[in-house]
Length: 155
Image (cartoon, rainbow, N blue to C red; front, side, top):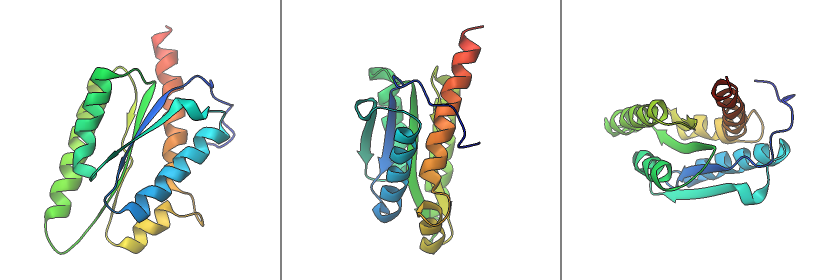
């Protein structure tokens, strides 16, 4: 996606669910997403952050948001870093599956922004400022997807 995207409708309301586990990484993703939202014309009052303990808790929070709030999209941010046990596979797999299921069933875009990396270094590279911050990239994708859903709904 191009950063030449036109300025967004400044009324878009977006929820961002952020896992606190691996906070060094997820906070950088959150800041990248926030910067992109403002860069494309979003208003501070229209961006709401919800924090959960880890990636596994993201899907349940997304479900609550769908059922109890009115947002134009929900962006999920987390980081699951491979360790020496199969815990990585369970958390990453279940999180991806549940978020995908919620996205398919929802009337609004729900974007999967959970980094799954082999090392902390890889996660830091994907959430840092030297290269493209995945939080920024995911917010840009969120805004584009809102526009696509809107085009489909208006036909």
